Image 1 (cartoon, rainbow, N blue to C red):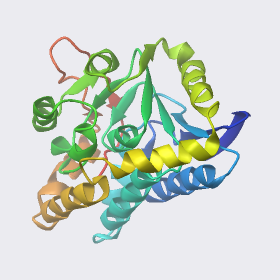
Image 2: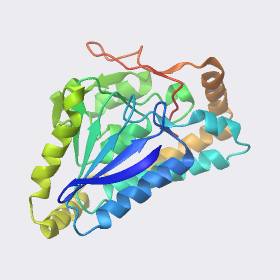
Image 3: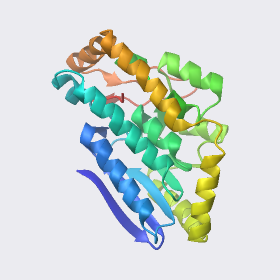
Length: 271
């Protein structure tokens, strides 16, 4: 359990997240993931990183139960900083990052996948931000990198999800494959990228980040300020308590017409 790194072939590092049962990460998990990504990117022999996950889904966000057990705001602050660190580690990785997404990609998963350079998804993958249903705000910055602006707003305000096939039509998912073929498909793309000159790849990544129209770091931190405001107002605890006591699923029943969601019993959500 935790975050592990492997090197299945020359030039490619695979960072794998495994926090059963649903990859709802505790505070230390976000920092562990950030450290693994930074270490992989700093390795001069690595030319592409694949970010993958074990278990039922790619990422279900923050462990809400951990947050509700803690006194005061320290767990919330830890989750805020931990999520920002992990998202930044994906975006700022000196080499391209390919996200291999299966099952649910919710909340914090959107922050990770939205900051990746390319996404390969399984046919069962669903993407969404159930933030409002969990008393939180944030990651619209990253969802806006996956879908057009008005769709992002509709998904955000309704907490609905979109499928991998829909994101593929919007051009944000490179390829959609059967679940069993996901790891091979992600490695195939990583292999093609890693075949390029490593020094040029690092220059290219820096150049592309430098021309981004939105500063993702500042934009996301701006969103997080409203999350903290919701907590100070007492709004967030009400929704988190209801989630913990009711054992409700992370959204999936509410979906974009023509798509299907993925329930995540006992999951968490990102802050």
